[in-house]
Image 1 (cartoon, rainbow, N blue to C red):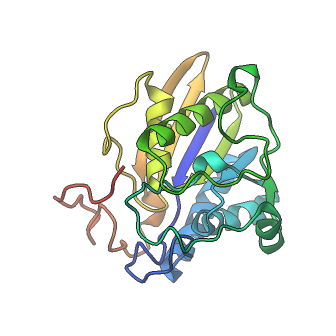
Image 2: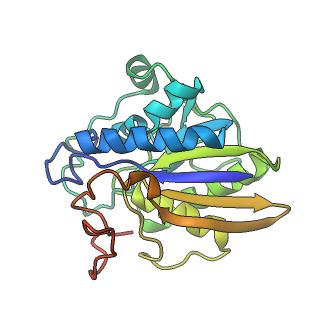
Length: 244
């Protein structure tokens, strides 16, 4: 099984343009999403999963429409908003019906956890529980990421099973960590650019990282200001600037 884990394309907040907790993509972000689609359609995914946040759904939209696949709204892929985040109180999250009305390719995450996950606080199979708590702890982020990794490894066991998940920097980084390790690692272990590809494999009980932060599909587009790459596609000599 292969899992393509994608951080959303450039958002208005990434570009320093504001837009709030549920911001949209920039024009560059929309171009990045189309470039992702052109590349990922050849992977022939059998399932798509996305965070309920608009910027993740917009990133998934070109691929979902081209392939005609439902995009499962997956709460475990929600953005991580620690208690120190600004402007959380002003955010009124839409429910599943509102999201599906706006994005007709969206669908609830219908698969259920097995008995080992009964009693977990979230969220697979519950179409009313779309959003993880604003102001959650790092420990909660780690737990939901590891729960989702376990779910995917159980759900997709065929050699040719391929899926794509669309999320955010923190959840995608923590999903990679969960995929590869039994014990959570430190923050900033995996740094991930907008619309880059991170490919995970699981076969016969062995979990592997195929590639990390791979962005060759974006080389014809400008490097966004928030990228870890400069205009010449060289890594910037700078410390991490996020909390994940």
